[in-house]
Image (cartoon, rainbow, N blue to C red; front, side, top):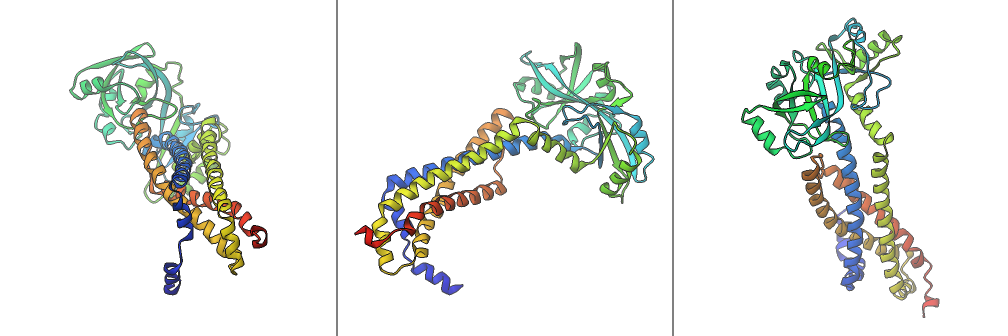
Length: 393
């Protein structure tokens, strides 16, 4: 290993010398790589924000198992099933509680701007809180009052004055489904691609707001297990126990999260668009780097032919081109990542979506960039391998 390192130190960096010889061409090449990285990082960031925003509430559910209708598409479109399934679930060993949860997308009037916007409202038994959210737990007694809700202060839109009034203890009211609603306090979750924010209230308040909702049915069933029981094992027993029930499916909490992600990935155009955007960024990068390396190879074809005449093998010539490719991949990634980080912050502040740069994404795109440049280098070196000294002079 030491000998290999010493050999690298003695090696003349031909790739870097060729790239740096023409500063303008190098800057153009790095700009092209940075642009491709920017495309990939933004598309992957948007895709991750899509999944994270769609599953934030799933992550906070106080449930080990989840029951939902086979007709359910995602959290915002769950359909219903009979509450008898929850009572039947209590017969399975290991089940501690089985509670219904109600939710629906609803148009409400912004208390500050008086403009209408779409949010998701959730109703649950306040004596057995459905979410692991300390701010909700702190004000759980408030939603027991008629027509009273808790408001997500990270809702997309203009709510600064309203939030300040609520935190000062002032009474703030608005309108939902033709009913006057009081906002008792706030919690924080955030917006998603499906809804601008979230409201939480008691199951009784929810049923008052939606009189057409059958009280004998539920949108979601939240099942908690007794200590010492494995969710996968109890889920299998529960599926067998409800094998004749065609109106309900049994998921573990993680399976429910995966179910939501799969919907956004495969059943909506937006998931495909982000994946396609990432692929397009990769292809654009391959084309740009190929053009740069191909131009460089053509400009130094006589030098490559001279090396071959001196006895250097094709492998040596290929390493020079690949060295250029790796240099472009590494140096071009730095401005691409820096600009993406700034755009992440700008988008996050404008939309309240969870858009953050992660180490895993940095590593992923850096590896993709190296592969992208190596592919371009491999295509560009075909002319080097065919270079014949006799034809050059």
